[in-house]
Image (cartoon, rainbow, N blue to C red; front, side, top):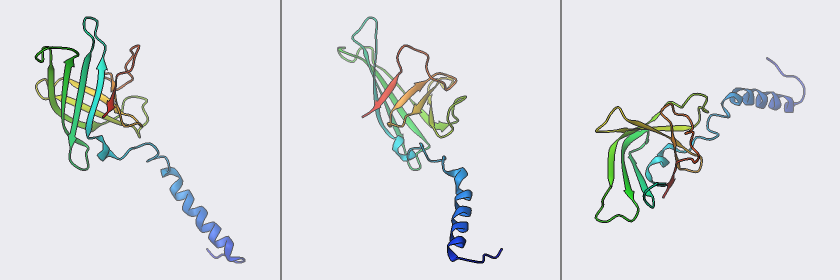
Length: 152
């Protein structure tokens, strides 16, 4: 293809062609946080009908590129003596497919208990860097309150 006339027209055509090639890809990294930022400690205070509450802590461990690794969860009733009622879980986690109708750029973690491998919990990695608990179908939990584990 030959362009006659001003050199500016040639530059405009080249730039427009370049933009048309890149336009379909512009949304891909709009939300996706850096995956290496998943590791860390997350805490949530669970309400309790017969106690002051339960402090739940999830520790996510991984090595780069941080798409899977180990996790540890500790649920400890508030104001307990000698660690009474403390429950601990550990297992593996991995980045998994998103739930139905969920934006494909969102990161969902599947935490699988090492002792009860049939038990898998799903969490959405939020734009704020927290973990929001999802239901077994990877959808929003339908409760009066959202269970969001805050990054520490």
